[in-house]
Length: 253
Image (cartoon, rainbow, N blue to C red; front, side, top):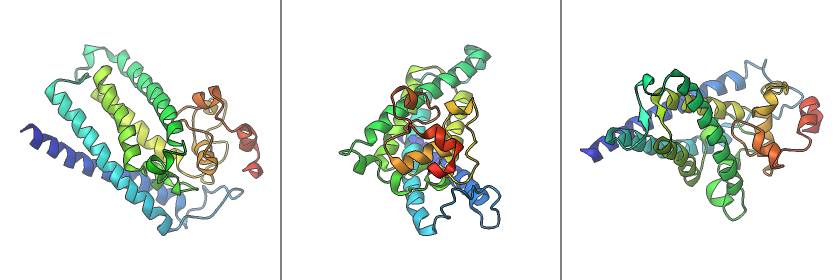
């Protein structure tokens, strides 16, 4: 019965995650890359729209990633049904205030986990096995957002699998984190030429990673390893030293 339930969870989550990917990534791509809608394009940086042939490997990897994430989600839900996780459904158990606090805490922890694992992925001996597939797109698109090699997808999924065993999380919080992760991944892979460079790099936005910040990572490989925040890149010296200047003058890209 347990194995049967786990299999059903896995199949259901695979369908949900795959549908989410095509709806969010595909929908965003249609909005920002449609030949009949060029209002978003920063013509000072325009490098041309990617070909369908260059997009197909991203979609293929994303399908494999969806399978990995589906297994992780099935394990989390099965673990909840077995009573071995710290997921809970009664908001009053920890209070409304804890929903916001736990949400922020998970994003901060996930950002740190992503930064340090991401740097490891770029080690020459590991890169071809764990991360090369994601970097086939020198100029990323929304389709690149979840294009992970299978081993990389496993490492990413381990964070959420682990966090539900050590930190009390309401299902609302978990869904909010997953939604944020999805939207943020699509946004940061939107492409360097699809939004004004000033987005989102006002005084507050300088602490958050946007499409320009992450596009530089795809171009240079050795800088900008964060997920949500620029904190670790600034602290550990992996932010492009000319990043601020590039935000003001696109000729530096």
